[in-house]
Length: 525
Figure 1 (spheres, rainbow, N blue to C red):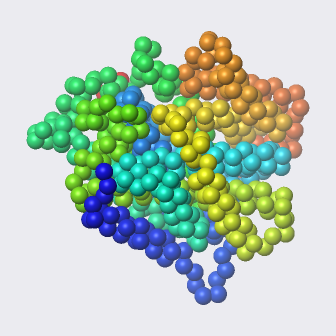
Figure 2 (tube, rainbow, N blue to C red):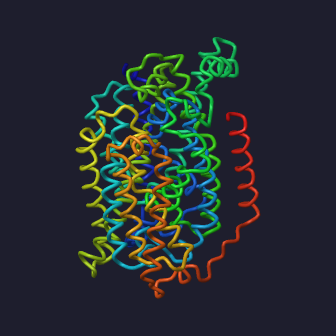
Figure 3 (cartoon, one colour):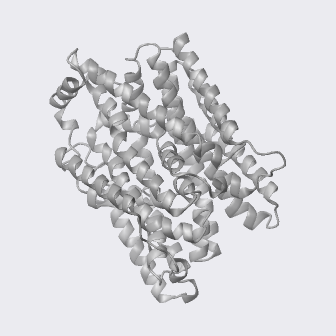
């Protein structure tokens, strides 16, 4: 299926508008020069609405829309735990992590590690994150985006892959984070509107003229096994979502690492006008997270009835787009493209930030001027985009459920990252050697569990595996830190003067979000 002339015009109009908007917000007064703080942190001037929208735009991309809808098709509503538990995690980030990061004027996550531990761990983790971002995250965004564009618009997939990457690069290369964050409110509005259109049309078809509610009722009755948040051990998908582990187990480790210690995500909160503004943005993003399963997972479940027998689950969302009439298809396809572009641009900017500030400015040219750092950031963005485009097909082309694959692969490293930051933030005794040992143990133990060929280990669900490895890495970090103490780098220094108090509005919003989560899990248990 290909786009009609009207649909194509709508997508082209979106592309022109969003590109022009990005250039407009990137404009500078005559004579002004752009420094690294402006390019990588938007001069620390982002308002709450830009922060909240940008958090969602950075997170929700093809790997979320296509991949999670595919998991909805294969598994059901249970995959929504990634979204709903993320809302709770964001509240923790806003309450306990952001006050420390902003009080210490942190620019990158590796910089925080140096402030807390020392220079070695900063370099090690900067290199690690660069490899992960380029070869796992950026490639997955581009690949799943190209899958959607190919299946919906009939565009050659390799051409779509290159086009998405190049557009995202050009869209943000002039203004940096400012161009990304200040346009993300438009991207997210389009994403939510487009997603609601898909869900409404799909449920309307299932309702057969009786309305959306009737369609939803029919769907629940037809595939009741797809409407359980907590899977039982006899479920064929228990290994992907092992029961209560999504509430009290390994999912917390993945979420804390992703939302709290991930440069790609946390960078927009570091660019806030103030802590209060950042926390408002966090709450805004948490409310949007509650809505995401309605616009992403629900269409995938509907595809079980409307598009049975798909070759791969990841074809579910594109199949639902085929239900849309001309005009609406263009709108929703533009929304999908907006999500891909916004997330890709955010990832490119974060890669450029880490390489420029944590590697180049410290190890290659310690006397580089501000103008030189901006140029290096732009060259890094170009290089990362080219690598992502070239590597996407070889790395991801043969996968069935790319979203689950990405989660499992990331699970190799997230326990160690979570250990490093949690102990670094809240235990004075953690040392650089202990933190590095914990991070290394996470990778080694994860690889052993996954590839040792021992059934008792390989059969452990990866979410449970993350929990086991987290505690093993934590124990190793504690033992080594106690054996070789380093009092000059104690956590007390970074916590000095930090106020963990929050406004009444933040507290009230947090209570409301938690209450909604309790209700959702109670209903769909």
